[in-house]
Length: 119
Image (cartoon, rainbow, N blue to C red):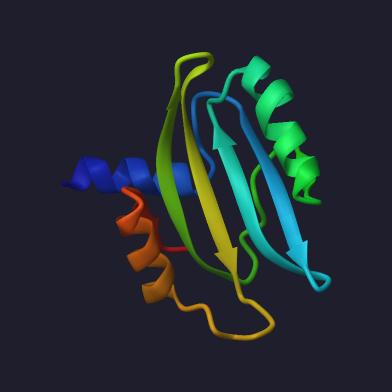
């Protein structure tokens, strides 16, 4: 149990043995969500993550998501036949509406088979 907690804390802190990329998506001029790609292949980043980020109007970066004003995160393992496996963390930020809460994020995350992360 302690080992799993330590691994989740390292992932949440952006400390991984592989690459770490992110896509920040803003709504109404405020950061709304940020997707972190941990240990994704270069091919997956170039052919999937970057184009999807651009399609959603996001800003792609070679580094972690900002930790300022975080509410909570959702960590999921993504496995594709074409690119293999990587970890994706979706970080949720304080929204202008103020309607999003950590328990809401955690509940939705668990419903999708993910692991809820505290900021």
